[in-house]
Image (spheres, rainbow, N blue to C red):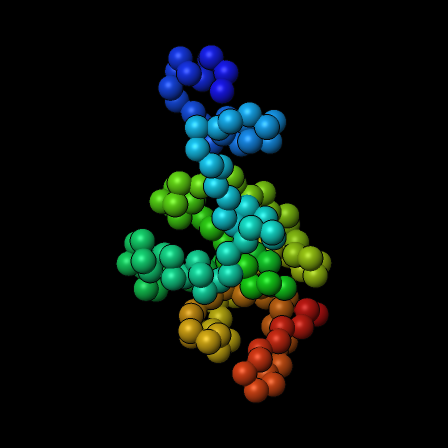
Length: 136
């Protein structure tokens, strides 16, 4: 840790990430949930976290990556969890459909959670317990 940070005794998430990426010892482990596809949280996990932390029963999770059904970790949840990394979402999904067009939907997820699904992923097929989304 460099002396400027020790003097200020105020480590920002950006400094913590910079230390981590540059192989310097940060003040604590840099935490990332949901900033990218590799660290993303599944929609049911986001809903359960919000329910546990905020008592939020009616919250609709925005699906930011439909292939893995990753839910958005918004600013409120990010702050509550003390996360250090913020994701920069692209204007389209890996399927090429826009992420900005949302449609309230409940598609029979195991926990019957109400989520927001992209409008361009509105064709569904159900084969037993599986639910499959097909892009246009």
